[in-house]
Image (cartoon, rainbow, N blue to C red; front, side, top):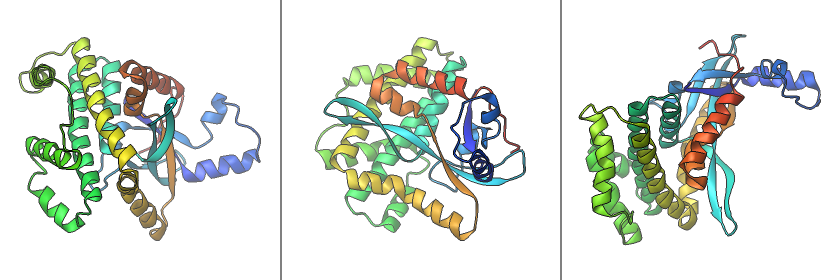
Length: 287
């Protein structure tokens, strides 16, 4: 069930005006009238956008542009706590798809999604580092074009960008162990091996652990630059919608990657299952 809940701006506005402040009951009647609908998760993919923006039409024919916001973990003195931070990035979308593929027993597809999530996170990290180093956007764009279709070169670019930033390796995982884990991905993607549930969980855990270390350092040490990059395309999307007078609304959904980072991979699966159960009776959008 790779679907995501989105909100129709007009239906939602009409619903809450009709309720006149009365409390939300959570009844099925509420869930079908408050402007929340389901769309296939693949609609998050839009090559023209750098974040999760979904265009859809509700059953009443209203057109809305949804920006998906996510819960992302923040580490503090008393452990992990949730926060909402900007729009969902591509690596977060892909990790979400991976978790759902795992739940639906599509283990090979889950591994592919986890792998793509890690690749896109390395891109995200490079862009944040470029923000930290105050690289001009035109120069960065020209440099990225040289590697944009070559994941291995992107990975190499990240390794040395991180080395220059933090003066050390991005992971403490033993190289031999790293090779064993990446073999799970290579065997599934390139050799046609039928992956097991254990393979999928092991690889997904590895991806979440790698991202956790890097993302935490970027957020904690370079917060202004991290937030600036995360919000950059969000602000551009809001401005564009206002100029074109398009209905725009943000919808917050649980972040599978954030759950895995904060409380482990099993918790991410549990959060995804709970979210799926919560939207089970939600009607589909028209398109």
